[in-house]
Length: 309
Ligand code: 13P
Ligand code: SF4
Image 1 (cartoon, rainbow, N blue to C red):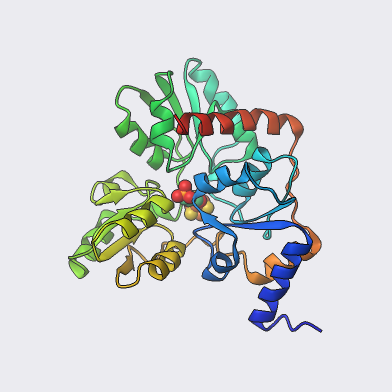
Image 2: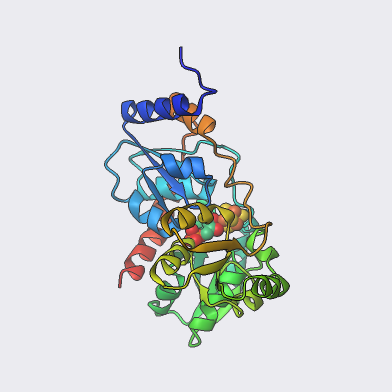
């Protein structure tokens, strides 16, 4: 009899089931410390997407939110892709629907649609190219089109627009409710409390907050910056989950969260219990319409191509 209330027994069972089901566990860096520790791969949205195209195992278990598991299925349609928590969604991804985007495109017939990976498969299928926070500037710079509809994140869109002054941007009015809550006053207060610390923020934060930062980057870029520089203290303006690997891998450095509000409830839904149940029962399995997969994979693969140029 297995005692699943004992954490170590639960971990052992997950590892056993993973082997039996020929599965690999992927986790976004906003997941809880427990999930990050048991995952085979941890990363930002781009690193995880690239990983999905090279997986050897039959089954991918995506510890993250719905659009991430969908993207994995689009990039590896022949694999079984599982999302442990059915209700783990992304409120920003829900801020644009395919019919809304279709209607919007009609107003700007010459514009290319650049869509943040934080979007549904149906929205990706309506897009010319997908971007993540770590490759958006590079992808857009490598595009020949001059007019860009950028959706759904207006903050990331403004960040990219500032780096690509030769293009005209039409920004969708979406945002991440977690990062968008950040305000300049939080930065001033943190700077006063920890004057020696460098400010690192995610481009999903509003632009007036980004302007005060020493470094702006995706979760992975923020983590790399903290590891590579000699600075010893950092104020981190992204979701709280990144503090776990940052503190673990940078002994002697100090990390402070810009605000206690930097917690994505959806990302925290996945637990060792739900991961265990997912491996045991095979749910929830991603199942996408063939035509959506075809169209969305074109836009996602264009991202990978333009980001590698
Ligand atoms: P990245 O993983 O690209 O940094 O994106 C952050 C995010 O909000 C994921 O939902
Ligand atoms: Fe969506 Fe923001 Fe949560 Fe990322 S952190 S999943 S963008 S709500």
